[in-house]
Length: 511
Image (tube, rainbow, N blue to C red; front, side, top):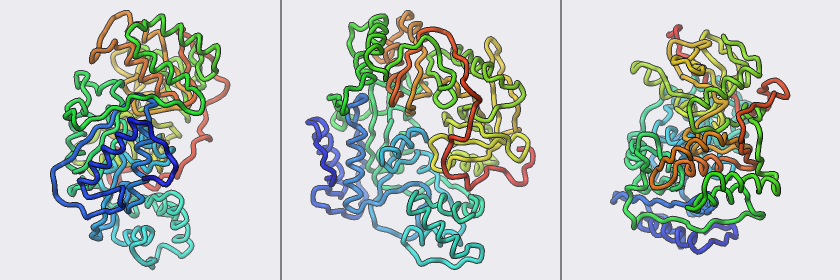
């Protein structure tokens, strides 16, 4: 058990015991502290589910601490020694960088699924530095790294526990020490997957190939991945391997945002009743705002959440118009959403580079300015450990009532982006922001249509997901109006380790 004095509720204690029993069968006994070498055995999969506020993250965090306490090694995806090891391993995963960063802010060493599926290949010389930093070798002697540079690397590693960040602190770029990426061809050990309601069938299959011991943490009230007919991956797991946390825990003070989310479970709650409840709570608690307009200043860092794509396009164009954004370029500080990669098969290595640095579909980024080459952009990847990258970019600005998007600039191929001032609620899953604006007229439209998904009115599922994206304050926007900005877009508030890897393709000047 964790050294922290934690009092579990009855259902949390049962879940902890169930996970502990599963791990004991895998040779890891948290009660006795015995950790046996891994053996080939039948795969074990468990789903631990619960709505927002039910204590899933607390339970995950305590289990991670307990596993570290018995000597389990945490696998981050940054670097893995080639030296043979009998140590047991744990990887804590999330589908997106933003979801992983939410866990990291709570002290859980999480990484993305992509970062585990694909491994970096290190130059042998710098692999010696990585082994030294992780305590598996002596300090190396390299011509291009002084003692002062190695000291900077060690100081960085002790703070961030990231090999790429440490080598960047020594003055190296990623292209100096990472020679490529390859798909993992050997299994790991124990995998915890948060936000597993976002997993599609292919990702679940990949994870089962890598982890013989897999535990999914997810919210059954969220929206299923697009194209899966309302089904989530844990729906197919046998009932005896599933457990749902029913009790909703309070924080030190009642949380009005969670109150609203859980009020949606009442089958008698109609849309008008719910909106009246929002307005009533807003009079008593400033963490809920019954807003008459969209606040444009908030859109630069947290998108307005909408249901309809047409609403999204109108809002993002309104955002650009009030900031007097030019048609042929982006302003530094404009938010973008990665919409995928447009790269041919011959550039598979570069695709892995982009994905490993966080530029996967759905990633949120902030535009920092043009890159050194035409069509390249300097970007801040929200939630990434090393967030600043330079990448070949294709930026698409969608226009109302126009079938084809406007492209202010583009490389011939690379990472594609849509504007991120507004996003659909589906794409917002797995992310959280301090302040969240929900465009209520869209949900009213869904309510009037009477659509049902997985036995629940669609508007309630949409509202639940949208509301639970807010960490501190919820804005329930009831009118189709937009405020004026109080100032210019900014980038000076973006922190993070500068990118050690510029994603530029040498020898391919057209990219």
